[in-house]
Length: 234
Image 1 (cartoon, rainbow, N blue to C red):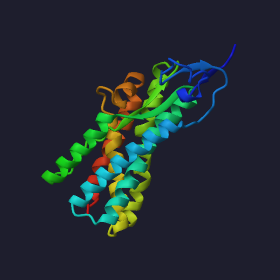
Image 2: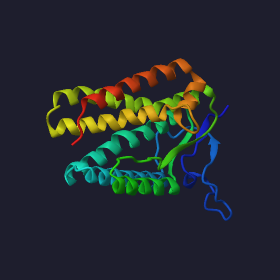
Image 3: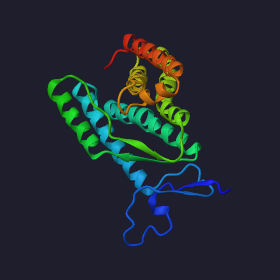
Image 4: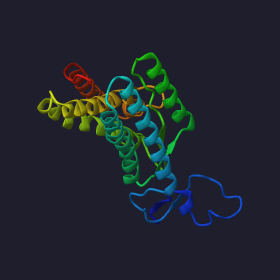
């Protein structure tokens, strides 16, 4: 029996340039490629990252943070939270032999900018960050979907947990505030994505294993409360 093969981008599919072939996703059989990024996916990731980083940086500046610190927090926060979250979904799906690529949502990107403008005009720092998602295709059961879904929030939780001691060590410095903000963003993203509602990761995780979902959700909430009570924002 032939092993299943995943085409990670429609550009890789034989005959893709033939007239009438315009499907964005495809699935076939053979040896898997392993971890892979298509040029289309890289463009979508960069577009989503730049939009989020710009929005976060602008909000931090409006809250009184200096430009250099705001840009640093914006980009580092996005790389450590959004990017690694999505890559965790992608790589886990690919480990299961599935096609997995990130795609940006045009309306999601627009919503990020709209919320940024609302935050700046009202002085209340809030942003709705849903610029896109990892699309997957292939044979997967409830367990595989659950594991793929929990991978993103778990990465955010681990990053926040690792940074927490550094916040203590550098508490009274700008470095401590930087770590604190990144820790807060990651813990908040973990909690938000674990909400068992709609397309969020939590619904798919709880359908797979409610105990694992509860353990990570409670741990993420405790971490979020701890960082909220400990870190001052400059």
